[in-house]
Image (cartoon, rainbow, N blue to C red; front, side, top):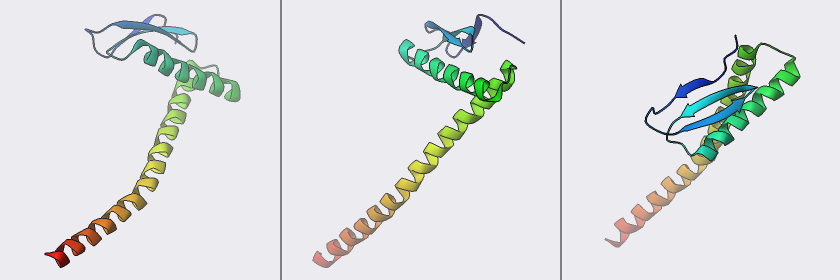
Length: 108
């Protein structure tokens, strides 16, 4: 199944941005900055092209799903890494707070 000039409506009252993703033109309506929307579209296009090259898949829908999974994996990996970094900082902050509370009790 192939679509051309598909409208994706995010916020119907806002401006429209035309983007190219995997050889198809999409009109994106929303309040996001046009350059940002173009950047997102380019990223998705790159992912889809890379997956199509590696898998030799010609089915656009399958390529899109595989690209979505790859992008979701990136997102979850980044979130996990951020959480892994935040946990030790949170523990340190709690220890510091405990020390400050003890010090305040001793001076009271």
